[in-house]
Length: 481
Picture 1 (cartoon, helix red, strand yellow):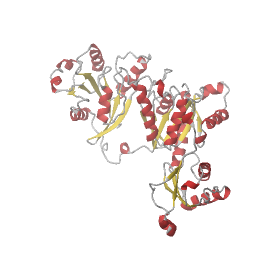
Picture 2 (cartoon, rainbow, N blue to C red):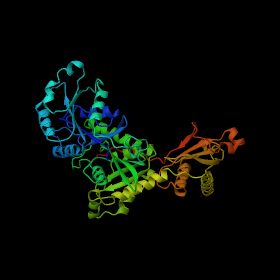
Picture 3 (cartoon, one colour):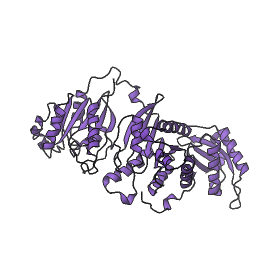
Picture 4 (cartoon, rainbow, N blue to C red):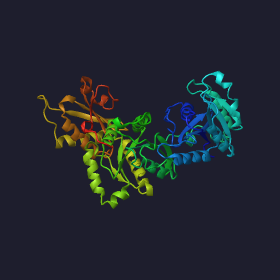
C-alpha cells in the first residue's frame, strides 16, 4: 500500500501554504500576500502517531495568473486531487464565505473521496462561532485553525489522522523504507529558464512541475524522491535565480534564499547552463556558493539539441566552461536534452560516481607517499629564511574529503604552492572530481616527541585552511542575465 496523500486545496489567499508549513513545522512553501504564489505541487512526508502520510500544497483554484499560467496551475491542482486519499478544503474564516468558495465546494462535492473542511484564520474564539455559513460547502468534519495564532494544530492533525485510509500492517514499523534517508541529495540550480523543471519531470516521468517559457515559473524548492538501481535519491528543484538588483518581489528573493539553502543541504549540485546563452553573473554567483560550501558539482549543459543544430561542439563548450570557472576545473561537464529525456539518467549516474568520490577515505600511508612525491617534484620555496616542512598528513573527514597536514609553520607556504599541492592530491588520490578541504597546522612540542600518538587526532580548531584556488568571480562586472 502506498503512502496516503493529503491534498490541501481552496481558492487563492486562504492560507494553504501557511497551513502546509504549519503542519510540517518547517518553512517549505513560499508564503506571500500575492495571490497565485504557489504554482506547482509541493510535497512533504509527515510521521505522526505511527502513521506516515504525505501532505500536498496546491495553487489557488480559480486564480487568474499574471504570466498566463492559469491552465498549467489548474493542471497541477487536478493532479493533486487525483492522487489524494484525503482532500483538505481550506477557507478563510475572517473573510467569510465567497462566491469562489462556493465554486470550489461544488467542484469538490463531485469527487468521491474523504474530505475535511478547515476554516483558517480564526485568530480568536469569537470567529469560531461564525463559521456556520461554511457548512453548506461540503458534508464532512470541520476544524477551525489559526496559523498566525497557532490555534488548534492538534485538532487538525487528529482530524487528518481520523480521515486517512486504514494503515497497512507494517506502515509504522521502525526501519521501514519510509523511515530511510535518501542515499544521495541532488540540488538542481541555475538561473531562470535553463530547463531545471524539464529535467525534474524527466526524472519523475510525469508532469511534476510546470514547464513554461515564462522565466521564473518555479517559485519553491521542490523535492522529488526516485530510485536508481534500488538506491533512493532525492532531487531538489530550485527556483531560477536572478541578479540581486533585478529581484522584483519577495517571492523572487525567497527563491534566491532557497537556492542557497538547497546547495548547502545537497550532497551533489547539478549546476545548469543554457547552451544557447553565455555564462552570466548569476551563474558565477551560484558557482561561488558551491565553491564556498565545498560541494561536489556537475556542470550540466541543457538544450543541447539546439546547440548541435547551431554547430556547437562539446569540446568547445567544455573548454569555455573550464575557462570561465578555472577554480573548479575538477567539476565534470554533462550535456543533456531533457525534453527528449536524452542523457538524463547518465547525469544521475555521474552524480552517484561523484558522490562516491566525496565519501572516499585514503590511508595515511598512501596519502603521505603522494605528498612526499609532490614535494620532491616541486619543493616549497624558502620563506623568511626558513625552509617550509611538512611532517605528515592524515585524512580526518569525508564529504568533503578533509586532510590535515602537520608542518613547521603554515605561514611559510605560498598560495601558489598550496594550489599546486591541491592539484596533485586531486590527480593522485580518488578525489579527481570533488573539492578537497586542506588544512596546515604547526606541530606542537608533544607532537614532535610522540608523533605516533598524534597521527590520527581529530579536526583541530587552530588550523590555517588552504582555500580552493582564487577565482576572482566576485569582482567581475554585473552582467544582465
